[in-house]
Image (cartoon, rainbow over all chains, first blue to last red; front, top):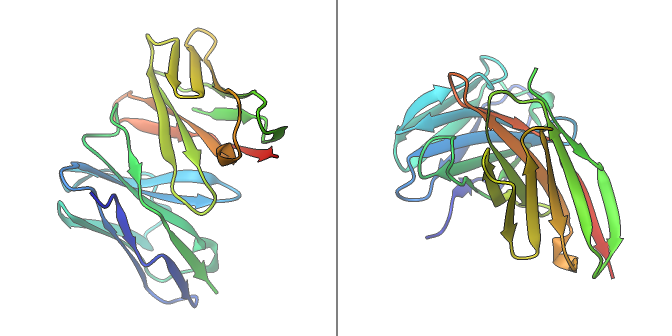
Length: 115
Length: 113
């Protein structure tokens, strides 16, 4: 298996623009997670899905952020409008089951820079 | 408030030496504790997952311990190698209602030849 796939790997955009990050989880995994990592705040869970349904989105910073999982093999994280403070590395991870006991496998991340 | 604190923030040791990283948590109720290794520019990779009843768990040269009474965990690295240079992140899961992950800010380990 190719592991968790994320695209793009790098994104540079201007403040106010819409940004869409994409993730393909490992085939057969039922849970998908979106994380954000910065030097100041470390790793933060934004939202996670189980069987394509959002279970916990309490980590989503504000209404500018939205995530979807239209099917078991694809998810998007959208930021509209983007702001400089959104600059971070965004990771997608998947696991066989919910957040509980299963190992999460992380993608390579998308480095977002908002100018 | 659930918190996970890691120490030291950074550590530099010579290749071949052993080291121990610490993780203290106040997460309750406790479900499990995970250690991740994150190489620069890459996503975290799981090293161990420990549940309440497990005191020690090994993964090659990595040994994690858990003391659920004192709410402390450690990650011991034996005979360090240059490839061990990475950030090590401690994550604790609680399961009161919705499952919640609380993350430490990590220890940055540098191995020098």
